Length: 193
Image (tube, rainbow, N blue to C red; front, side, top):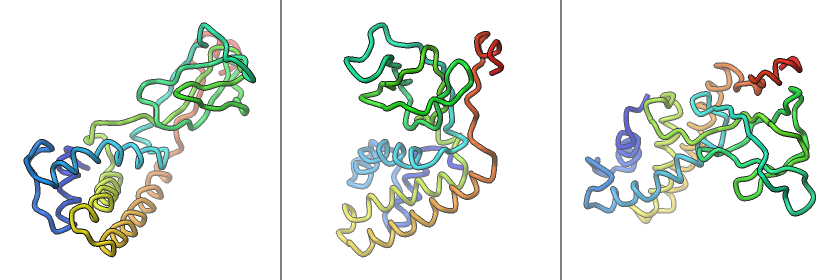
């Protein structure tokens, strides 16, 4: 398990044969690249799989105004949202027809709706050890060419990332299914949810 973003970044840098950094604000090319690329790499890896450590649930109320066309309701997604896993109506049934546009779920389901989703987990202490390794590998693959100028190193690092990602996904999947979306309000209880 990683203890900090710096540890994840340093693992990536050391795998590339670079010197470790003390902080993302260090005055070095490696630190600058880590600082710039870390948020997008983190979000991409978290979005790639329903990691147990990044799962969340939310109850969403319908927006005050209806969408312009096609759909009856719109629901604003949580600010830490990265990926939908499931949407359930107040009756406990899965909502099958919906779409996301600009941070809003559009559908014909009456309010409230319940979502199970992958959230932006920013605390590395919550990452599984294999997820932290996958994050380091993806960051290494992302930084390989800018730091070394070597396309072969970048390709090799990308392959290593894919292998670590597959291993981490496999172990994570065997540790339980993602959280269900069961309504927890009185209305959900009334309908058997």
